Image (tube, rainbow, N blue to C red; front, side):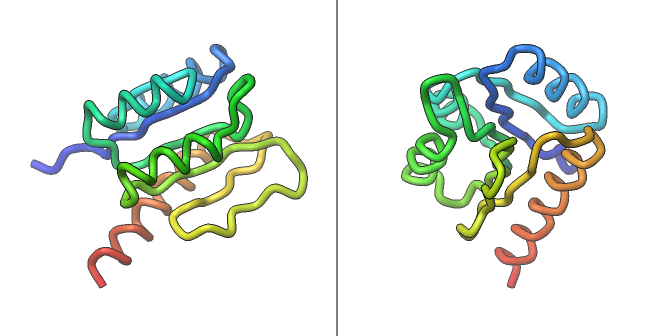
Amino acid sequence: MERNPHVLVVDDEPELLHILVGYLDRIGFQVTAASDIEAALHAANVNPIDIVLTDLCLGLDCGMTLIERLWTLHPEIPVVLMSGATGTQATVPGLRFLPKPFGLTEVASVLRRTLRDREELVGA
């Protein structure tokens, strides 16, 4: 039996983190939550992660710092970057941008599409 995709959700806003984790769990993802860069990197090193959903602003840290450090250790993990900052967009391979505000179904759609794209790339 194939396991459900494992998503690491990283956000420093506890309410949004709780909502995202609950929703993604309900629709069949395995979910690990982290509220900062160090916790996220630890989680990625302890468990096999299929995809990361992270906020651009993580308190005093930046989601791009997380991505750079994550890809140093795990370059194969695709990342979806959430941000309310206007003009932000993903132009890096393996990185997809999700503008805030967004609906929960949009989050699921972007995660699934990113995973599907990654499978096609790896299988090609």
